[in-house]
Length: 288
Image (tube, rainbow, N blue to C red; front, side, top):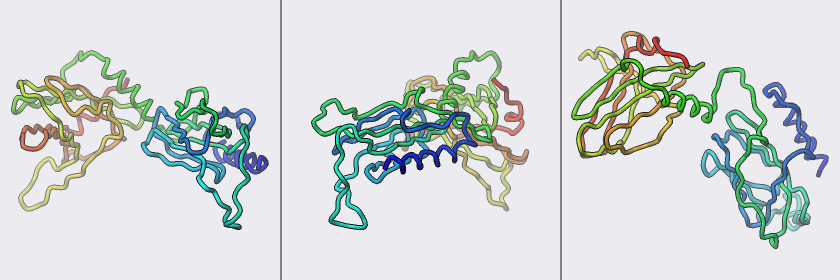
């Protein structure tokens, strides 16, 4: 079994060698995780998990949410060759398998070690720590959510030292495009929403789309919905002011079209405000 696990680990290392800036790992150097029958181990990642590999059939798991991998020992595991033959039971300290977690910018590997059910100190959840992460290099400039969050926080800490790019006001509401920034293949929209009334605002949706600048009666309006790859705050309610950063992968559109941004309140209210952003506003994006 150990020879098989070592071969699998070497294969994984060879597959990732061209994409990573790290030296290959060996099983003896991997950090250990204790695992027990009937107890789930939750592995919490600082960024969305892209892939999880469990090297043996003694381990099973799933991704209940993007940032958490749930791992456990397989229940009533029976060999396919002999339905009556079960795997040899483990003894405390035996290696159950290798757990590999791949995030947007890292790979982390652990050795799962069996502990019997009498061990009351079995860990039920861990946070993947920086020292366990090995960075993955990508050919294209791709940022993880953690990096995008850092960039967005840098932007939101900036003071508004110049006139907003665009401003719209309607129904005692204000929508303001403070600035546009670009970093690599990403576009950051710094936006502020203002509520002048005393009635708080319950946000149902903020929609982005590319639409025709001029709509002719003889033609249908072509609208392409755009979804941010990241937003700093997921807030749905504000009383007076709300500022947020929305991040998109690089996009282009002709002068005959505009980006339309619509702020929509929950049903029965009708307080909706929209803003048109010309492509020339995007082309004037700052760097940071």
